[in-house]
Length: 314
Length: 311
Image (cartoon, rainbow over all chains, first blue to last red):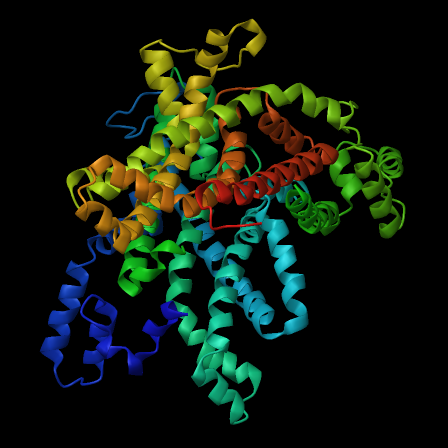
């Protein structure tokens, strides 16, 4: 129960100097001291270098993906049979693939798929997870039903379950997002339930209940705000997992349709040319790794910044 | 023994839920599952025949009870594509996958626990930072990229190890091991990262306990103190070993594809491309059963580390 206290601002300021979050909260209360606030923010950022590095990496990847039409040097789909499997050069920064397509341009465009998948999966899995988790912790009869289904889902590795889900649908972006989201939901449900069960016993929730506040309102106004920090951290880790699973699915031929330039698809294309043209696998792979690294660093940084005690749980 | 039996029975609900999920997966399909399995080129008659042979024309509950009934008899169905019983297919593919799983687990434990202890012992130093950097990198780099880097470095450039493929144990221990070194190292990296992080985090907590201070105060050397602490940190580490098995099982699918190893992971990947649903269902069930059983064993092992735990 102790790991929810940090988000309840009125009690936080005395919590001690080791928790930068509460420092910021304390100074938010007297907005007159703008300078102090800025100094604190700066110190807070300096104390969490992983967060900054992560955000910077993600910012670069996002800029490149959004700016793909201007950054790409070639049409990502343009086939050039005369320029097959070329090594990286001034004309083709990352070389060309087996169909003579420019790997650099495809890699630049491919980031869009990964980022889109990361974002939608994180939002959807967190959303459904919060919903189910809150129902499980506040509606008694639903608890064991929901939790047993989650246990069952947890027993299957995420990529295997996603593969199975892809086997029953036709591959497009929506079904891929669905297949990646489902295996991630139990993680959120478990987190929400464990936090909400202890929140339920807290005095302010009991008080709200006693004065006749209705359940939806208690959940929205009193429980949810206290879940936001751990959820933000969990959502980042889910985003990282989503990028990896999407790439894995595409690599195994069960993901985004092959004509779409995604990093996973590009690496799958390069599978048969490891000896001749390793660059087809290498460059999209490095970009993918940088993206996941960025997301993971943001997650680690957020976790440490928001509450060091979460470190063991997530 | 009685306790073990009771715990074994307690896993049945989870397996039941898994069976239900696995069964209803195919009915989540927005279209006609029979048409999907048959593929685009199948005629109306083919689809109808397939529907009848899979029992998909029966009411849902009949299908379900028939399926559970055959599961209970150990019959996992017949592959639609190869028309071979799935149990036979799985048996053929078991050796490579089991070899990879066992070697990877042993390798991971042997590397990660000393590494985690070292990082915790030298917390805040460059050793610790290096270990943690390795852990975050291993979590971020897709397994198949590492796999190809290993192939490129050790098999193509240096030519020390075979590029791909699997050699059975019956061909000799050394050829068998040689064919497994790269895939197991590849698969172990994520697992090592996970276990190292957990070992470090738990050990750091234990090292702050009073009895560690007492142990140090009475003049115990560094190594005995660390071993003492490690034993007290064993339960959370063992738990992570158990839950991490999911990473391993999922990773096997990718690793077997990278290294062209004819194991169960490769079987399921081929099955997905052929919409061979009985095979997919069986592999899902099997991996869930492995996960549940291994975690049960981990639960039971707590007693070894902590005599206060009684069953």
